[in-house]
Amino acid sequence: MAHADYIMQLIRCDTELRELFSRNAVEIACLGGGPGSDLLGILKYMMQAGVRDTCLTCYIFDKERAWGDSWSDIARVLKPPFSVYPIFQQMDVTDSVTWKSYQKFLRADLFTLSYFLSEVWRIRNQAKPFFSHCMSQMKKGSMVLFVDNNSSQFVDWFDELAKHNGLNTVREGSCMLAFSNDEETKDLGPYFDKFGWPKRKSDVAYRIMRKA
Image (cartoon, rainbow, N blue to C red):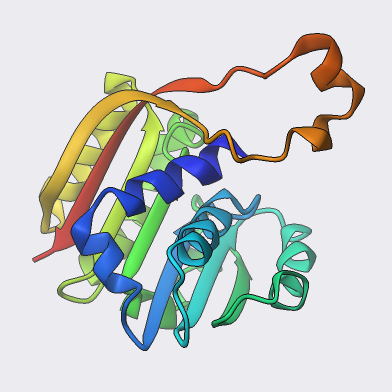
């Protein structure tokens, strides 16, 4: 819930990211986005901003195949005033056989990496070819939204990848983010009455980049 809300907030606060969703069609690639925080954050922004008549295609990449079933019916359940086409594709960042054949996602207008680099930090040497491939091959003008724990090891790794693969900084920073008060507390059931709000703030670093 929190990670999705952070994605929504970062899009809402940036003019160039907001502009993407004023187009008739927009394509998104969520790298490591299987649990859905990236896509849910994007959908939350679009629905709150009153986006209509836009066709959203979202490529969701993750190692866990089971996430695919989670997103097949999302448009039917949400009934948004725009078209949503989620495309789940299984891949393992450490195995190039699982991702080199994917080509369509490289034309995406926006790539998101939400808490993904910290997840694969342990295996960064094996994962680096995947990120380098994506960043070097994405189309000119593509945007990248990176958000993760505010730790130099993750941020420095992303900055190094971006520098070596032709990504220019649009906006960057670190801050304490809190998820919005409009999230549904009733979903927590009796635990909300007993414990109150869960941890609402996170120390995050973010980067908004553009492919040169």
